[in-house]
Image (tube, rainbow, N blue to C red; front, side, top):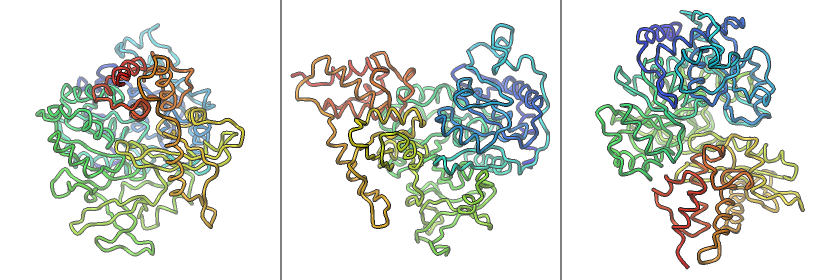
Amino acid sequence: MKPETVFAAALAMAEAAPRRAFLVDRLGELSYGETCARLHKVAGLLAGWGLRPGARVLLASREDRSTAVLFLALLGCGMTAVLLDPDTGPERARRLIEVSAPEACLVEQDLIAAWGLGGPLLALAPETRAGFLERLRPGRAAPETYPGRLAGLAPGPLPERLDPDLDAYVMFTSGTTSEPKGVRITRRALFDHMDTLARVYGLGPGSAIFNNLILSHADGINQGPVLAFLNRLPLVRPFPFRIQNLEEMLDALYRHRVSHLIAVPTMLALLERYCPDRREAFRGADFRLVVSCGAPLEADLWRRFEETFGVPVVNLYGLTETVNGGLFAGPGDATRRHGTVGRPVDCEARIVAADGRVCADLEPGEVQMRGTLVMAGYLHAPEATARVLGADGWFRTGDLGLREADGCYRILGRAKELIIRGGFNVHPGEVTEVLLGHPAVLEAVTFGQPDAIWGEQVRSAVVAAPGSGLDEAALLEYAGTRLEGQKVPARIAFLPGLPRGRSGKVALEEVGSLARAALLEAPQGLLEGAPPAGGLVDGILAEAARCFRVSPAALDLASSPLVCPGWDSMAHLEFVAALEARFAIQLRPDDILALGCLGDAVRIVAAAVPAP
């Protein structure tokens, strides 16, 4: 199918099956009929604003349903969605908005003032479980917010043909605010790659996708709402991913007859570690395969997961600059080789030496890719684009790898200074930039540290002004108000100075050694014997404040992931590790999954601490 008409054809298929489920989320089921009705309403709104194909529109929402529908509406109208994580700090958000210069904004209400937004604007309000038509009745929904605003709008047409070289979206990669990199993905690149994914994954009429990755990231939005809509399939994302709902997630796979699970390696590690007795979740008649994406999949984890759950795992390799992937290890046995990323599909790949020579098999070098899936370039950044994208179309990934004799590729490491934490890309320069913004920080550096569950953890080392009194908890809280949660360092070491080489560059390996030593010397344990009740509670609150990057005053025993923004799955495991270290205990998997609030932590730790 020609990329000019891909979306129009998908819309026609969706309208022909109005009762079929498109999205299964926390609100219940959103049908293709309701989805198409919303798409036409949003098209009317955009036309009323005078927007034309190619116009950039900012989209930022924590609501899955709003993000999915509005992104598809922009795609159907030929607009360019500028996707921003709603948790982006105000300073960085304003810089990215300045660079992208959107002509209109579709954002949550609290972001309008925080990000200084203006112009044509639609505020997004949380949706309830009431039906779509009921919400549009007078008095049921605020008329100036989405979805209530749709009630007074006439449906608008969606174009039948659109230029395939228009940008479908712009997505900013992690980086410093001085050089933001907005990846431009064209409609041709997006639709061609979605066709590749559908064929490689074997999607068909009976398929159903489970993907609860964040929708402001490429693997969430493209391998979720876009892939599902273009293939008229249901997308299941009933709740955000958290360690506490691992078993509920497995139940959902079976209950909703899911055929494909899209996940990052951290999810697989947690399932293999804490739910090994739930083998039946993947062995129903409907389930086909697991897709691992977003971060390197360690060979032993890959092997253990397949052996434990009896299901094949496809290892997908790609970058934001290549839509989602390009190289696939699996699902066929010829390419599903543990420890590799398989072979390129619908694109080319090669290994290039530092002198520009194409490497022979088994010779390490930089991985480069070429094909329609490669980005058009970085938005308003010709120099940054030229550094990675040659005139011949070859994209320099910055990853080091080699090609084996059978044509499968193996990733050896990264040339770029990039940390991948649980599937999220973290540029160390962005974290360092934020830390240096604190008036008491004289020097700072950020680096990655290997981690068995998350792949890598973010660590920072700082030099504080003498006599400032700055400590780790205060600096973590400061960073937590300016960075998305996954970018906040897990630990910050305070050093008297940063070691440097002859060139003046910070010696990262030496910093890492000094930071580890400093953190080991930090007080963590208690005196032998069971601590008194007050000490137990105070110790748990102190560790929670450090792990969740909040002030201890903001926490009490009722605090839970629902009311503590920093309490995500990464922070949850950090909290568990901190409790085990502080109280010299080992928690059982059942305890870790049942830890739903700080009161639970007190009860669980008290039961685990040996009697005096």
